[in-house]
Image (cartoon, rainbow, N blue to C red):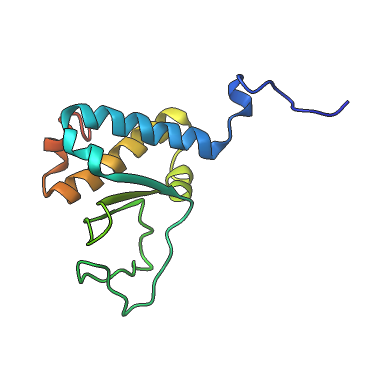
Length: 134
């Protein structure tokens, strides 16, 4: 007998990438209620960050390469000439640092809050007053 192990409506059939996407969307929706300007921001998910050459710079003139000491969990990019502002969340580094869904949801939200704060030029605590609390 061949076929799916579980029907599509059962959580077992949801991939890790889809579950992660849902966590990011939940966090974004929570923040959009407080910060309506976030509706103009693109929130993207990619599996891993890419390491650019050491001399590479992004649109802001800041070095785009990350250090060997720390792998980033997310990245904020200001709006360009013909593209909106973007926030990138890196799925695999976040998953590796968490043991279960609750920890993952908390870390995803912290990453999203930190990147929104960077994009808006604010402290993470002012973006979400519950930032850093368990």
